[in-house]
Image 1 (cartoon, rainbow, N blue to C red):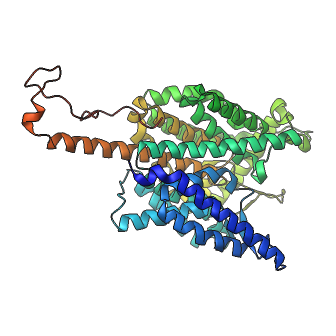
Image 2 (image 1 turned 90 degrees about the horizontal axis):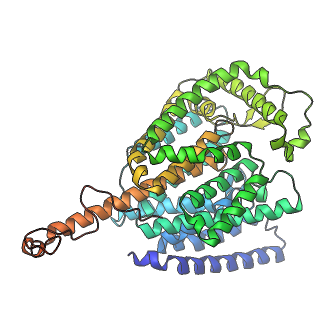
Image 3 (image 1 turned 120 degrees about the horizontal axis):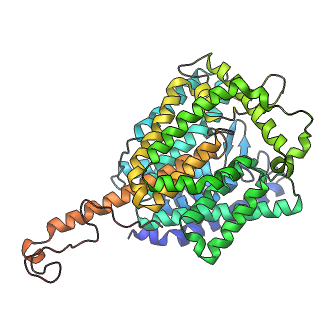
Length: 488
């Protein structure tokens, strides 16, 4: 096993502890000097953190990666700092540091990168949005939104799939993510107990919080972790916090996950993804024509932040009506630049004076990135599901990861897959699948190499059942067959 991986947790926790102490001292020093630590002084604090944590990333990249995943749930709210047009948080800084480590490791020959069929599509997707950003009406705004909605998810994909190289690392990374989400859920339950309205955990929007909680709940439930008492308590906390977000979409989709899991385990991942993409695109175009049927008058907007959001059918119907209006405006904007798109921007729907997303991933991909970006998104998803379809039949881990991606994307039909936490989660779980595929392929190659090096006389000395002359396997990996799932 990799010695760095075994020492990862203690080393990295010590480094983070030292960083926290020094940042606290810096904060106190700034306050003593009369500078506002929450204002201009934040630049000094970020510089101190970077000076400490970048060497830590170089010394122990996997351990730092685990802590970055642990902090992901807190990075889009309470730990987020904005300086001018740039937003800093532990996740974006950490994952970009991880990418630099990957590039340096590959340049020095210490890390090996394995291409997957969808990798070219992911790179072209980033290039496509770069072009649409450059021709956007407001390049700065478009660049800011594309950085968080496209660039950081792409960096997540390439960094994770390269740095996770063993089954133990895979498991530690997943445990770090679920642990962070569970801690986040506990904060949410505390907030809801104090103020029982729609939950915004630590300043994170409800729908992003619901995406995180759903991902953690699916992993614990379908991976079989729930059989352990601590994991069962974590699942209960996640489900309680999810209920408190009043996220209707995710609650409905949770009821459908047994069906999705069954389809994935039977090896029909490609069919599931293609059918969903085709049916939902047609449904979106039809829905735009009939949305007036869903308009309900006389609803109290204030009550939508309470449990009536779930219990009153009128709010469900009116929500569909409002979203379809956004789809209509978004498709009209798409017609302005159908090939390369208009770039990211804050959407203002006439008459509302209110910034929104288009609440539908088809409309977002088409309007922001044009037909080119739309086809690239579709290609990346279909290629990934096709590449993982056979593995999902024998590997529960793969099916769980695919179901997280599919559930979050399906919720994007009524919310978004280019804003908030959703795009990061989608690419994160694709990276986990490809990392798992890479280390299994690497172990299989090593086992075959060992088999070839065994002298012929030795390999024929004892047969499979102790019979001379019959070759017995020297490795748990039989050529041509997948090993048992080492991940979970």
